[in-house]
Length: 249
Image (cartoon, rainbow, N blue to C red):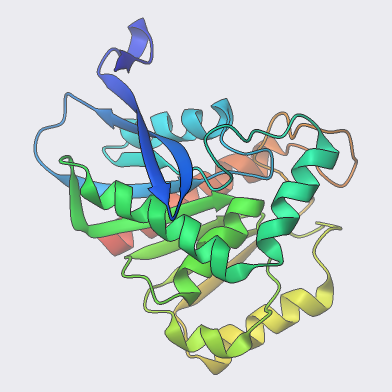
């Protein structure tokens, strides 16, 4: 257990070893030890390079807002892609096997709910890029969560009927100029949500492309770059969403 730094000595973090099936996983729990009692929990699911300092930073930001955050590990304890080729291959395994993706993200959710600091009846999940896809799949699995937030996640709809399993509100934060999101996939996602009568909202940020919340997306591509305005606006939109689903926590 260690503090995040002298300026925020109350923010604590702890590595958590856990398993899904026979796969060893390792996530990170982050909380503010100046807050007493149980509080809402937020699952944080990583982008395609796996669990990095980026997700841990977001978890610390959530802890400062009074939440307990758990950074899930979808790939495996010792599996951290080193380049775009490895990241694409690893993410591709799970995009092609949505059942496995759901199992992995569900295992992370179970770890969050187990924390002594968390009110297990008030939890949400957020995800970035690949993680955005993962948390939408978590919702499609029928998971008992208060809400889901996807930041520049993949919005394809491989099994549209699964939309009927969604029990919680969804907030989709999307770059209006994201070249990696096909218009037909976006349309299919919207139709899935409408047909299933999901409580959903899609916010599109003008001028933003893919990975707009990541100062360093890990590769050079004009279609994936940081957008400070969209980053800050989407975080504020998430905070409003959380205020709605959690109330005064």
